[in-house]
Image 1 (cartoon, rainbow, N blue to C red):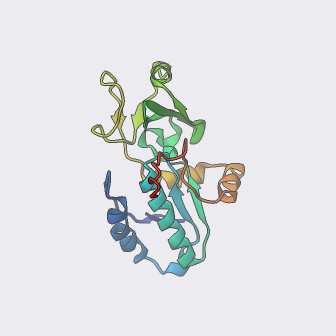
Image 2: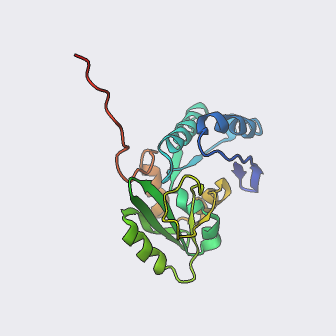
Image 3: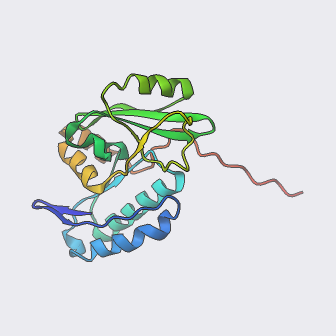
Length: 200
């Protein structure tokens, strides 16, 4: 998405659960052709939580655009771009952290009220039970998430437009904190990597 003082100037959408690197660059190139690169003054990118490769590819692409344009790149938590959290609404965002664990987070008033944190199934159920009227959403496709079968959690897709709105609604201190941090994926724990066996 390309935005300016007069609002959104260009926007492209795509959906991909696995082929992030194959799907991102076509729409990104289309948007960048809408404006001279010298007019781009800031690049925002979602930092997750998200898939290990998808989040890394997104941030790498954002850094590439920033390098080509000479402007700063800032990572903003992707949970702030949940459609149910738009206009300052309270929303609970959860995800499957694999290996029998989950992550939970609360967004309220365009801010991260509870930063994404790991929990077990009991903790997930308690978090959901406390939701009341607050919507509970996940960014993951039903076929890929490991939520207990009896839980029905709506899927939403974070939107670039809402990430931009989150930046606009953030106060000066929050913007300064985001800007001061090097863009990097929001990992809740180190990736699960199996080391190659040594050859003797």
